[in-house]
Each structure stands twice: as structure tokens, then as C-alpha cells.
Length: 171
Image (tube, rainbow, N blue to C red):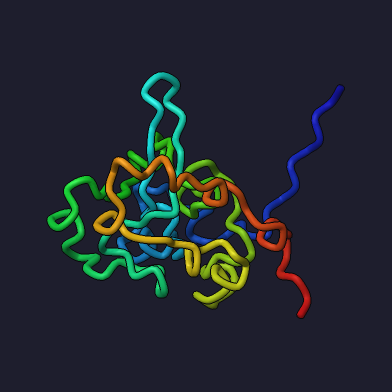
């Protein structure tokens, strides 16, 4: 059986297709974030299998309505286990959501239609149902670690059907 030839990307020529992660400027790097805030959800790891389980509990610094950190510049000082994404670690972190712009670019894949770099609109990540907006049930300060297993959620590792489309759905 022969393998289908790869289709040329409509995104060829954009900086995330022409530069390595290491070659990107800091503003280019930051723009890879789609603003979904799924990485700001508390996660549990099964020590036996290494499986990662997302919860619908957020970091205490997440503004769940805006899907943005309340103190982005100082997040590592305020939250000791906050992971700053780098070109090195995005290639190895097993908990980045499958739709994460950093992960997609590191894997050589195209960004989805709802990514702000493609749509030109930071709200499309919310309109596509990808962000955590309206789905967070509490913060790490409100829900004790001992109860996190009761808050495991499947949606952070899945994409809504409309978000999986090649182009935005017609209004």
C-alpha cells in the first residue's frame, strides 16, 4: 500500500513554518499561544502508567473568563510549579493539549483555523469551543489536592467538532 503524498500547507511561508522554534523572536514565540488556557488547568499523573489526567480546576492566577494569567510576568515566582514553555520543553512535555499551538508547530503541523495567527481574531479560540472559558469549576486555592480526582475532565484533551474543521463553520 502506498502512502498518500503530503498536501502542501496553506501556511507555508509564515514564520512558524520558516523558522525553528529557537529562531523565533520572543513576540513570535508568545504569539504561538492560542489563548485556550488548557495548560493552566491542574493535571494529575498516574505514577504507574505516566498517564496525564486534566481537571477542570485552574491555577490560582488564571482569569478563567479572559483565559489569561493575572500576573503573567511574575507567574513563576507566584506559582512554584508553573512551567514556562521553551523550545526545548514543548518537544517533551506530555501534558500539552493536542491543539496547543506550541505543540503543533514543534511537530511541524499546521495551526487550526481558530488560532489567532490564522483567524486574526483572539476570540475565535473561544467561539470554536476550545478555551477553558465557562468550564473552570474552581481554582487550586478553592479545591484541595485531595479532591482533584473528583474533578477529572475529558474535554481538555478533545476538540469540539467545529474546532476540528479545516475552515471556520459558516454563520
